[in-house]
Length: 314
Length: 294
Ligand SMILES: Nc1ncnc2c1ncn2[C@@H]1O[C@H](COP(=O)(O)OP(=O)(O)OP(=O)(O)O)[C@@H](O)[C@H]1O
Ligand SMILES: [Mg+2]
Image (cartoon, rainbow over all chains, first blue to last red; front, side):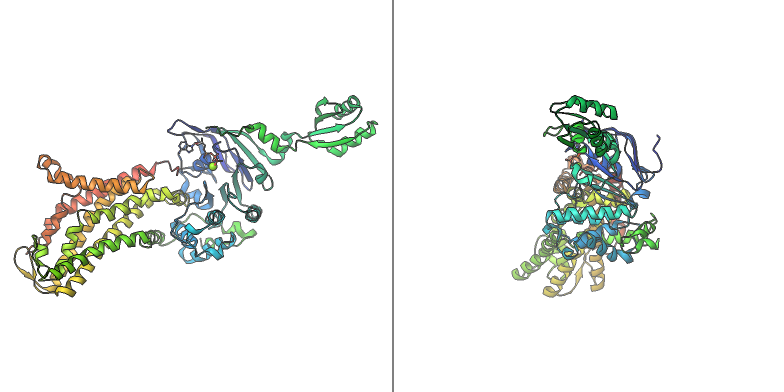
């Protein structure tokens, strides 16, 4: 067992096989550094929620280990979890209690929370997610987005070192989505580590520093956002009546995978700046009719990693 | 520690305010009170209370209107002499079924209800220690059971005293007791029945850890109660009678003898405590390692 220290979340060969025989998570090694905003991506049924449940000690792994803020889980739950705010598979509250009383209930359950400041904590959390005006309403009368906000408020009841949020913007309106994104950026700016699951790449791309991609229970990619962008390998596409010459220039510049593709040529851009490529082409007297950078990386990479199919992988 | 209590304030000093996982004073009591709020703040449970409370009223009114105590049993016959017997009569008729329904509803809900709503996972990641949760749930069941029996007794006593007054309190032994002594006997009956029903509630708590369906758990417990009472009637299985959860319930009548022999309640109390101990432990053993996937 070599659970790395210095990581907010680390797993080694984490595996969950349900009693039904379903292998939901298959030997994954998560590495979430302190201070990272980690986008945990994957299509429906790829094992994100199951992984999160194991991280939080709700499910026992079939094999492998998980550590949260340096504590082995589930054994270290009492030490680690008070410093962790979580939203797992959507919000869940007592329908006949108000938002206020639901949060008071969770606050009362926290043995590390002093009673004297309970109302301040609940008020502060409701304010943060814009629910102050609906605090007295019964949860059963909350809209989908209000419920989601209350779930996020529960995760923010105490200042946290780590937030684990399973699809936090599910059901939110565009303003709500933007607010939550802003909230995460603000929290991350203050040093909070965030693990954010989603099946939408575009959603996490704007806030994440790190990305892990799940597919059929396996972690098929894990990198910094920049690293993943590089792997996304955007291509330079040159339109010219002299494709062979253009290809030679691209080759000379050191671009990989040069392809003559009349009327033009393409190559992997790698870490070359597009303007340098254009300058070199012009310098070599290649008549450039078009230049663009295509396949803007991540989306294509994501699709290539997880497949195009619409059907979930049961 | 105290820094953990400042209100959420976004900003760079956030890191300094991180909670240390130390224990706040009075934390268990606070969690327990929130559990009671959950039980007693719920409209469904008040509706159940209304049903329980209507039985003594019904008895009092029917006996008053018919103008005769009568009835086949001792407690019913005594109603016209002392109104406290309305309470005893109501407890007697509600004991086989109505009170077990109430206990089943609450006990079945205990863990399965939270699992069904999904609130269980949020309690556990708060985190709530699983043993602590089982104890808080058992405490909630116990207090609800106490409230249910006391409700019946208080409504019965109030209605009975209003309609029939607090005259001679005759014991099963034929002697008479003063009003205060009679009230004491009624309180003792309530305490004993609370203990018996809590034993049943502990079984329900265990069942509640096996499923995510609170209604299913409640109905299972109710069915067990009925089966236990049926088996208790069959002399062919007399050997197992002392182990049935309902076997000693009617011993509360011993309280109505003179002189009072509290020891007569011993076997029932021991049985109920054994049920509480065994099934609370079983609930903990099952729940402490259970996967929470709801
Ligand atoms: N309790 C369970 N018993 C059996 N199989 C389960 C259980 N929970 C989840 N699964 C299966 O495990 C797989 C992964 O599910 P999981 O909920 O982790 O996916 P996910 O990545 O969170 O998907 P989504 O994006 O739809 O939320 C699915 O095939 C699911 O059917
Ligand atoms: Mg999920």
